[in-house]
Amino acid sequence: MRALCSTHLIGEAIVICLGALVAMQLSDVSTGTLWAVAGPAAVLCVLLCARLSAPWAVSAGWALQIALIAAGFVVPMMFVVGVLFAGIWYMCVRVGRTIDAAKAARAG
Image (cartoon, rainbow, N blue to C red; front, side):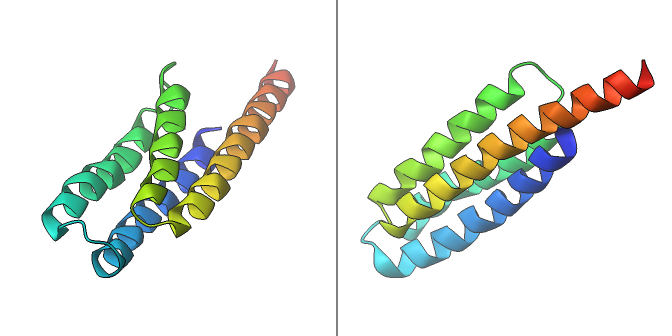
């Protein structure tokens, strides 16, 4: 699960940064405010990659997905992007757990 979810979170960090660049041009929100929100969100995505083995990490990943969907209130296209990333997150967690179970069964 860790490899799939880590890949997803790195891609999401890139999308968050690119979304902030778009929001600078399309919204009335100040540049400082955008980067004060987008910067830590992208950093949290990257830091969460290192903590995916912790029991709270998947829940934190869901919180990031909800925050990305909520970014649609600033840039409406982010509603679509957020829902797509939430769906991908769901599949990464689901398929990752299946892979982990298969590896454990094969090893045991």
